[in-house]
Image: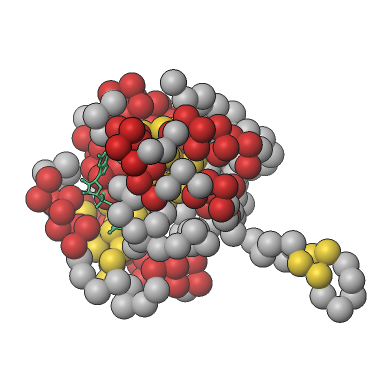
Length: 251
Ligand SMILES: Nc1nc2c(ncn2[C@@H]2O[C@H](COP(=O)(O)OP(=O)(O)OP(=O)(O)O)[C@@H](O)[C@H]2O)c(=O)[nH]1
């Protein structure tokens, strides 16, 4: 069984970007789901919709480059009222629309929140991208980075801002591990090492226990957010580097 830690908000500062009333957010939590192509982001969102819709009011925004494929897949799966699932067609490299200029996504999220007020949680799926893609904290309050075992056992070691600093790292499709010669437990352990205690969940749609852990993490994060104590973290600041001044910068 994978280790799970829910005390993943070590800084303990009040949020700085969600409007608050008496320290509490006045809009739903926005949770991003990013990761390389085909790692199971849409499937994970489908799982969460099924798990959480009996108790929470949900909305979903998907991102694809040229289509609305992921939104159509989720609507066809019947995981939520189809009206609550909306697609953004970025027309550009996915990270552009979740990080560099989040305008399209922000407008889509705000429209959804207005049309279905009051929502509890908005799930925003990034288009599949590379290991450097993370959400801007201007768009989401927290984010999940999804890898899968079929991408290779060494992917966690390759690192990147999402692997190291997303609020949650998911090692997905653990049911496939024996077929692709990957040690999923080792991937999770390596995740813990590079993530400074931030949580890692090994997930499979066939493993009810792992789905329960994912559900519990989301509910815990939502409660933390609602308490006004959640601190949105930008996982993607520049890697430490040196200018001509010879000083190490991380801006
Ligand atoms: N075996 C197995 N397959 C899974 C699991 N989760 C998702 N898949 C499969 O993985 C494939 C990709 O899943 P998606 O959810 O479409 O992945 P995605 O990350 O949204 O893909 P893009 O949006 O194209 O980047 C599909 O064939 C899913 O059925 C899992 O837990 N186990």
